Image (cartoon, rainbow, N blue to C red; front, side, top):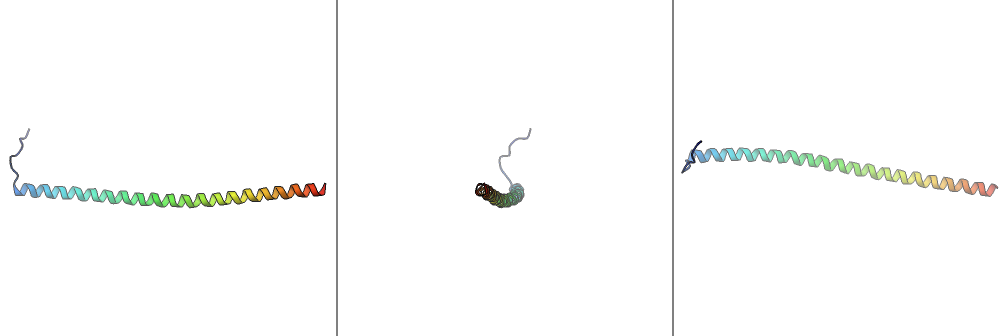
Length: 81
């Protein structure tokens, strides 16, 4: 087992600084990747909302048309009877 150093040399501190900068660069790259994925997820959710809205409008239109068609048939049957 190595013993702890009592003091750090300038070269050793420079090595540590370089290593830390390298790791922070890696972390920054990973955060950019995560941000890109969240942007894609937000885009997918937006598209899903549009599709659901269009589906709801189509369903409401079909329901309304069916209701008025049935009402017209009932009225025609009552008038002709």
